[in-house]
Every structure is written in C-alpha cells, then in structure tokens.
Length: 535
Ligand code: ATP
Ligand code: MG
Ligand code: MG
Image (spheres, rainbow, N blue to C red):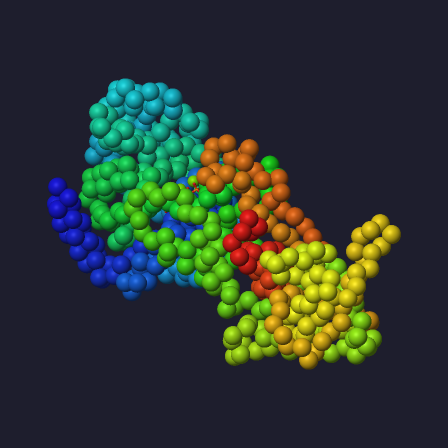
C-alpha cells in the first residue's frame, strides 16, 4: 500500500532528522573514473539544490571503490567542475575514508552468518543466480569464513578467485537480492589508501553503508538504481543501522550527445575528439571551454525539473535557448567578419580615421561603451553582398544602400573584379546625413597603418548527426563537426583572455580559447545567434 510507504518514509525521515539535528543532509557521489558530464549537473542540481533549499548540508563524496579506473587527475577535475557550477560542498569525503569501518561491518555480517566467502567464478555466479541455485560455499561455518576473509585481506588469493557475498535470498524475484557481492580482490594502487587494501567493497555493499555512516537524510540517485533499493535497505536494516531515504530521479539525456564516462573515454582515446575538454564533448570542461555559462546549465536543470519518469532526450536546442538567454545580457558586443570582402568608401579621406562609440550591451547603458575604428577601407561579410538584389535580401547590392551598424549609410556604386572574375573590392559612398532606414550589416575597418586583427575562429556543429545517439554512435560521428576559419575582428577583442565571452554581432556568441597566443587569438563559437542548422 503506497500509504504505508509514505508513512514509513515519514517515520524514517523523522528519525534521521533527529540524528542530524534536524538538518537535511545529501551527497553528490561521483566515481573518480572520468570527467563530469552535463548529466552530472542535474544530479548536482538536485543534491546540492535540495540541501540548500532546506538549509541543509551536501557532501561531495568520491565513490572510490574501483582503484583500477580511478586517479587523482579525475578527482581534481571533478572538484573543479563542482565549484565551476557554483556548488560548495560542506565537506569533501571519500568512500575510502570508511574502509576500516566497512571492513569491521563485514566481519560483523560474517559473525551473524549473513555473509560468506565464495569461490565461484563470475560466470558460475551469474548462471546460479539465473537458476536460483545456492552457491556451494553458502553454508561454510562462521569460523572458517572469518579465516578465509582474513586470508582475502592478506592477499592470499588471486584477483577474481574469490569474493565475499551477502546472504540475500537466492530465490528472490528481484535478481539483485540473490546473494550480492560485498568484497572483491583487486591488486591495484588506490589514489587515497595506496596499497593498504587488496579487497575493495562493491557498490551494493558500500553505498548504503557510507550513506548511513554519513547520516545522509536523502540519498538521491538515478532510476537505474531503483531495483537495488531493496539490497540497500536490506543491508542497513540487518546491521541495525540508520537508514537514509532513497529517492530516484530520471537521468538527464540530451539529443545529439553521449552521456557516459566510458564512451567519452573511448572518444578521447581513439582521437575522435582532441581531449577531455574538446568543445564538442558533453563534459562540463568541454562546455566551459566552448563558452557555456554555469548559469545556463543550471537554468536547463531547473527547466527539466525532477520528473521521475525516464523522460526521452531533452532537445539540445533547449540548452542553447537557456544559454542565449543568459549570454544576451552578459556578452560584450564586437564586430567580426568571418568571410571578408574589401570595401572602399571612396568619399572617405585617407587618414581621416575616427572612433565610433558603441554600447557594450545594447539597451544597457549601465554596462558601458567601447570604441571601434572607422576608416576608408572596411571589410564586410561576403554573404552580405550580392550582385543581384531581391526583396527578401537584407545585404548590400549594386545601387543599393545599407547601414553600417553604429555608423552611417553607404551606397554601392561600383564592383571591381579581378582577372579571374572574382570580386576584388566594392566601392561605396558614405552618406552621413541620410538617416533613411535601411538594413544593417556589421563591418570591421582597416586603417592605413593598422590592419584589422586576424583571429582564428573554430566553428562547431553537433558531434553526432543522430538525434538519439545509440549504440551505433561511431557511425553517427559528424565528419564536419569542426571547421576553422580566419576572421577580421574589431579592436574590442584585443587582449582577450581564456573564457572571455563576446557576441559577434549578427553571428553568434564566441569564447576565447586557451590556445590563444600573444600573436593570434583563437575563439570558439559557443552558439549561433538564432536557432538554425549551424550551432
Ligand atoms: P557514467 O555512466 O557516465 O559513468 P555514473 O552514473 O556511473 O555515470 P557516477 O560518477 O557514479 O557516474 O555519478 C555520480 C552521480 O551522478 C550519481 O548519483 C549518478 O546517478 C548521477 N548521474 C550520472 N549520470 C547522470 C545523468 N545522465 N543524469 C543525471 N544524473 C546522473
Ligand atoms: Mg557510478
Ligand atoms: Mg559509470
């Protein structure tokens, strides 16, 4: 009866709140076996968010029970990503902090006849679970189990040769209850405990016990763990320990990306992408490098909410929408021409260069202004010029006028071609008095003594062409996911540093990349201005 359940939960919670002095205590428990991805942002949003909302406490707990996959580099980067998103753990803990306690509890289980040392190889365990047949080692006497477990700890067995199993119920309808593994042997240096241990606790054994030891009131986890809630409760109950309340929530998934540390590792190792922070990846480092703000990712999590239903993938466009909303009032405007053609303003005297004052953020005078140069030679976007005008075309064409954004109207008088028949330059006249409304284009000026700054711009598309990226993800890799162009930029970008964000007028939002040098700035396209095929 669901009512009983709620009652039970309420009682549990009241007891727990007593133990924590009335405080909500949660934890975010990543395994340090890779970099955090945007899915983890949802888990953090719930773990840290729920604690904060209730004046509680949230730990960052490294669930470090598989030393062969874990290392300090991952630990450091996870700490960094948690802080970048704006979360402040009350304390940083490690499952390995409790290895001694967990070991003592295992002895306790054995003494009570609730755990046994099992020599079945993994395949045999699997098939016996399927057939609901007891392990031949299930009824070894307690004294012998204690000695065998001690031998396990002392390193007297080989890896994979033996495990410690909990006496669940081999006939239970839920296969997760069929004699869960508590400890396995791993001869591997551990980032925190070094070579102290060669037995390591399993998820089923350690997660609930560490939650209990840390007095977690609300243990939030993703839905795939729902089937294991039974073993969670079983273990804390048989040991008579404090039992946290477990709440499951749906994993976050977005279209066009993969959220799995294991698959991300494969992409990095096979060179599909250039490292953990390649802006095409779904790691938080990648989103940060690409220019995403923590606020936009938080906004997505808020929008997606706490649905329990395993929702289908969230459209990537929703994340982009959150991002544009956030950047619109944050990113200083600059004018950058990605594919330039040269324009001569024939009635503009050589050397009569002037400075034009432009708003940092239009509509926000309090955000200040900056200056750009205007001179006789300018560059405009190739796509903003056409030989044939048409009604729906907003750019420049012969005998047509456009407004140079923040400056004046220009009228196209003549187009000069080179020998190959390509446009070499366009001649226009400037009409400062004419304020007649016409379409606006962006531009960059080239002074006689100072060419515009050339920057490298990296244009990204989805890494996967499939909307729902499935098991055949390798075939869905987009060969055109990264394009590099060289562009002319106004002087606003001078002196940019890593992570500085701009809106390139009429083009999109861009972010200064760590590959920038004193002589060449590199920018990543964070997102285009409008929703279209281009990201
Ligand atoms: P992966 O399969 O990518 O390695 P994981 O679940 O093994 O993910 P953990 O490091 O164990 O990764 O995750 C830490 C926490 O983040 C867990 O509570 C986990 O349930 C949660 N989490 C992981 N992926 C997602 C996701 N896509 N959406 C929401 N929460 C997630
Ligand atoms: Mg995990
Ligand atoms: Mg995993």
